[in-house]
Image 1 (cartoon, rainbow, N blue to C red):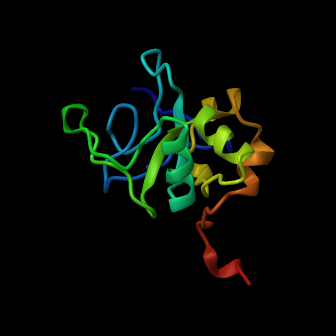
Image 2: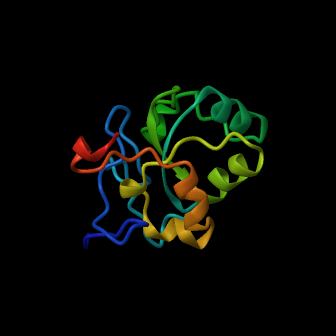
Length: 130
């Protein structure tokens, strides 16, 4: 698979491996024609987000081993469908987002400004943080 880009224009970084996330279960929010759900937003799950998703019919906490799905817990990084993330944002419970690990295709559903409002990325040189 060719290098994919993140919403910042750089090379897509890993989202999470514990549990292993991504449509392709490769730890990245890679996407392709098979990914009809656009699983491209690297989110850090919160209890509020998981509760809201369950209420809307997207129960992420329950493992589904036959699909390689271990279930998501608060604090886990998970590649979320862009439309589901937007739905959570509209409900006021959007989880934090790792921009460097969020695929540029997320921008088809969610404006960059909304993602930036929830960004939790740590810069390569954290020495500049005050």
